[in-house]
Image 1 (tube, rainbow, N blue to C red):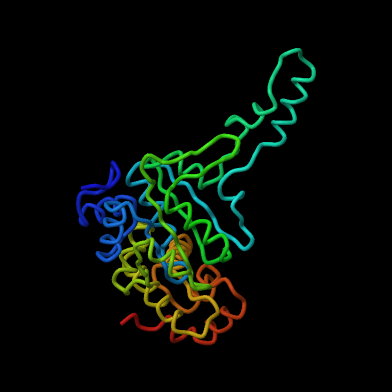
Image 2 (image 1 turned 180 degrees about the horizontal axis):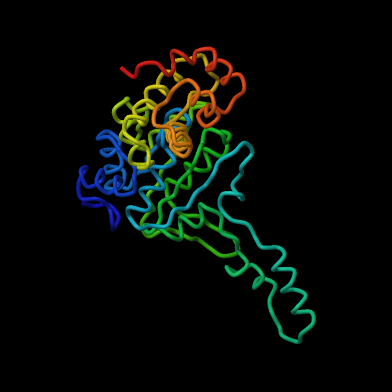
Length: 294
């Protein structure tokens, strides 16, 4: 296999390793991860918020015993915030120290690596195959930043005028996530392997809840998963994800609930829905939501 050291030997190995980190990956996702690592290609994960995209990178880093480097994207992020900047405070202190001493030091010395503040992309370049780079919620950034990221991903190298060229001997594993608040460009997609993560089936969500919240009885986990599936069918602003299902199950178990009835659901809806209007919509349909799990 031509991938980076520590990559998995098979798709089944991926599934076993991630399960060891309490992440239940289906075969499609496991195949995508295996190929991305083996071919040294970024993995682009899209899907609604809360389906476990970010957790893929976290679990992957833990399973491979690599450093997780996270670049959280947001509106207005630029290259300096993602790549590097100079520690001006430290440079100023160095200048003052030089002024108070007789030591000769060239001004260029103030732009050495000791004064360089690494941001996630530079840290990932320098870490190379010992890291997993998570570019989280790229859809929140603008087109210019996306183009800059594509350039970095193409070579995994950067030239800092005062320092020189810094390049990764081999690239880190890269996971890019998007909630599709805007469409990413085809150029970036062509650079990546792509996988869509959907909400899990009822049976898989029950299994996920049981793995992530082992104190929750199976019957309660099934009722929670069934109720969350019904909540996703309602006209809510934010459909609850797997994380919210786990939080709801945790809350119910902590309160000693053995079953999900109307009173228990009413008291704990804030664990699964985080919007006032959504709560009102759910309360109006509470009888149907906590009905038979089928």
